Length: 110
Image (spheres, helix red, strand yellow):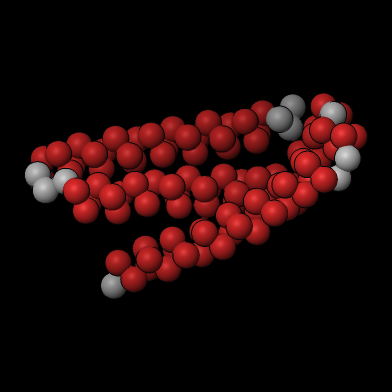
């Protein structure tokens, strides 16, 4: 059952990434250079919608990427000890990226 949930979350995070990527590309590359100034980015990040959007985009990207890496590890690593080491490394790295990303989102409020 857990495999089905992980499979579904991989697909859901992929859809979120595609939608988020279109929004990001439009906002950053096609809406004009005035959207890239420090003031406009700071104003955008003071809006709870954009904080939520960036948080969801961040979490879905990290989940999607690291779940994919875990699938590769499961496919190619046969040693149980090495599997646990890889699992620990992937979990630690993903956790650090999540904490760093959320810290940056929160610190941009001050």
